Structures are given as structure tokens and as C-alpha cells.
Length: 163
Ligand SMILES: CC(C)(COP(=O)(O)OP(=O)(O)OC[C@H]1O[C@@H](n2cnc3c(N)ncnc32)[C@H](O)[C@@H]1OP(=O)(O)O)[C@@H](O)C(=O)NCCC(=O)NCCS
View 1: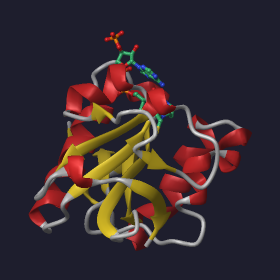
View 2: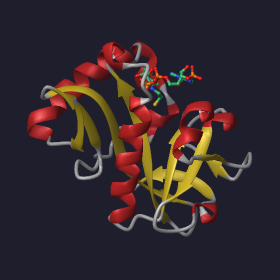
View 3: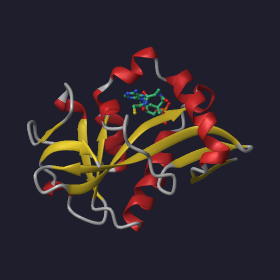
View 4: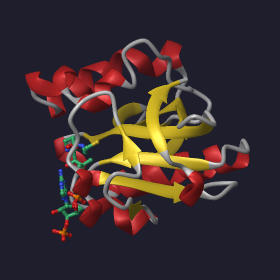
């Protein structure tokens, strides 16, 4: 049985880093998304981990952002990763959806995610019109998505930076 719980850094952080090492290749830290995370801290109360027998088998981490001249707050979702032995059941969507509910319950207006729309569109993310959001590095516009949480994600416009 798999349970999905908030991250407890003292219990889970090391296993999460190990999961990232195993699931993402060495190019991971070169990604534009990493520029939004490198001097920031994720939000353990909104992050979600999947546990199987107490072992971390999946994760979605969540980071505070500000967007545009208005410095609109938003949450950045990712990395999302699932242990290869537990793939094939859309566990990534269950974890991401739990983290989306937590972000909404905490009153955050909107979510941003960079990834495959074919997968994360199933969690309600919609592609952003080209040019509406810019990132601190090159980014394929076909992978940039937003979703309403407690507010209106269509209001997000401009440069996306770490909060
Ligand atoms: C992406 C990931 C989290 C999905 O795990 P999962 O929820 O178990 O996914 P499943 O194996 O159940 O696959 C669900 C669907 O997503 C698709 N999918 C899986 N990984 C994908 C990816 N990286 N890009 C696009 N589609 C993907 C599968 O083909 C499948 O679609 P189908 O049913 O039409 O064949 C997992 O493959 C992983 O950890 N990958 C490495 C890390 C990564 O690339 N994370 C995403 C970017 S943040």
C-alpha cells in the first residue's frame, strides 16, 4: 500500500535526494528549472512524498515564486520523480495532485510546472501562450504550464523568479 504524506525533512530528505540521483541524469542541475530552486527552499508542508512500507518511492517538491513586475506569488511544482520499481500507475499524478491540494488549501493563487503536458495536463495543468512567462534561462515554451490554485493562473505574466 502506498501512502502520500507531507515531506518530513528529517525523515525523508536524504531518501529524496537519493531518488533524484537515481531518476534524473547528471544534466539535471543544468536545467533552467534548477535556476528557480538553487538559492531557494522548498516548502515541506506542501511537498508530498509517496511511501511504500515507509520507504520513499516518489516525490513532488514545491517552491515559492514571484511572477512579473507585480511580483505575484505562485508555486513552482517539481521535480516530480517516481522510483522505477513503482512506475506504471500514474503515481506521479497522485503525488502532484496531493501537493496541488495542499498549495490551494494554504491559499497560494497559482501553480507553475515545466514538464510534459501529455502527463501533467491530466492533473489540470494548461500550456501557457508563448511569451507570457519568461524564465532565468532557455526554456521550451511547449513545456511551460500553469494551473489555478486558490486564484487565477491566467493573471501570471512576465519574468518568473525565485521568491
Ligand atoms: C515522469 C515520472 C515521474 C512518471 O512516473 P509515473 O507516474 O509512474 O508514470 P507512469 O509510468 O505511470 O506513466 C504514466 C504516463 O506518463 C507517460 N510518461 C512517463 N514519463 C514521462 C515523461 N518523462 N514525459 C512524458 N510522458 C511520460 C507514460 O508514457 C504514461 O503514458 P501512457 O499511459 O500514455 O503510456 C517517472 O517516469 C520519473 O520519475 N521519471 C524521471 C524523472 C522525470 O523525468 N520527472 C518529470 C519531470 S519533473
